[in-house]
Image 1 (tube, rainbow, N blue to C red):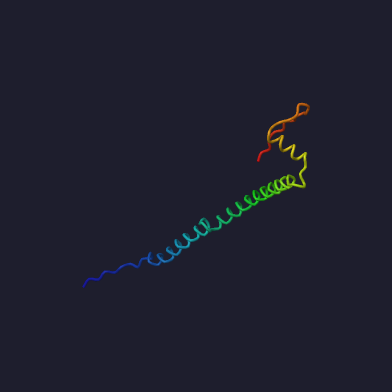
Image 2: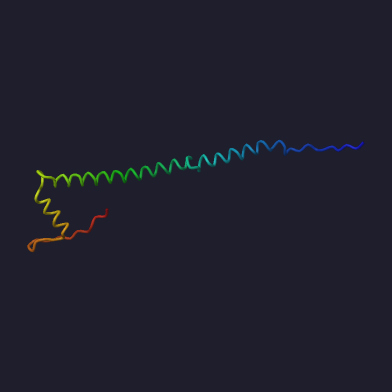
Length: 107
């Protein structure tokens, strides 16, 4: 009777560890680069800082506009302020006045 003898291969012992390594690599990659990963957290924090700066600038502009509007209400109406705003809106000046042209402010 003939019998075949097979040599034991080591590849069977490497299947489970290699699958575990692939599994951990997949989830490790997505933990760092995924939508809710570590890298995204830093990007969101940087965007938050930039947007907070914009919000502070807009709040300061609003406060300034509210102050200027308050000067235009009845009882606190200043004739100089009204005259200045009317001349600025209509782009007019008196014949005996000196006009100084300033560059427009970037907004």
